[in-house]
Image (cartoon, rainbow, N blue to C red):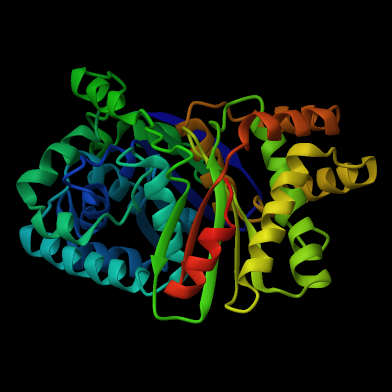
Length: 415
């Protein structure tokens, strides 16, 4: 386990973030959501403590302890005061080395997860996004939400979860501790019985897990639109592509494009869709950090009457970034936005710790952001246009609305 200490003057508050390689992208096709069940159940008993005892330890300290599932990894988060570090950090170790995985707690988490999935399905945006994701990634690792599917969750039992829990001890792990922490914290962790056995020796089981990370893109011109009919007057439109890994040198060019398109009131989507034409409730860009092919999506919500115009304006904005260079003034503003975006994401010690753990977890260095900011100065509009032309051609559309609106949009969609 790689330990990174990030000392900050934070008034005796510390944040620990442990990123474990392989999240929901490692869910087997017939067990989608198994990592979510694993992570949530591990909070309900580990080492010498049951669910009630863990809750008492954490709550009596006024601390926060969470375990989250993401596509690329699992994240254990702890925030507490410095003096409680020795009491609370062992819980992180016990979760990995000795999770209890009690059957009654697994069943409780299954019920909670199914309820969360049902709530998610009430969102028209989520339905449109799920359709886009399924169309683009198919049954690949990014083709489903980390929560999984109701059918799969119902079938998962303790016997299914145990092998995944056992594999955690061998997976690549990065622990970042930010803020104000005891001076001997690293040696304490290394010598703690709770962390005993955590290894970086990747065995055959771990290597076979890595082989499942290949992204499958199932898309062609014939299948370039996903339609989700609902009895609603709202219209959700998503246009996007699966692009490149975060460690690709061109990723920064696409991140600048996402700022240009969707960040702030000076962004292209806001100026065109909100200020000039007033056709949408909201519009933006979704371009998360991903270890493999990250989605790059423009999204907008509008009304039945304005659906066709909104679609055409989205297409116009997409074509503009492919066929036109950003002006020098716009480029300078985009770079300022990007720097501000990065600064905003590091405001708290928890954000700093999580970002560092995430970067290390997907194979980058802790100085990656500094390298990006240095490179930012020399990036040109021509480079950005080249990246858009290379990675953003032939996007696919997902629409969620009533049948009549979908029929009209289908006629007007030309991939």
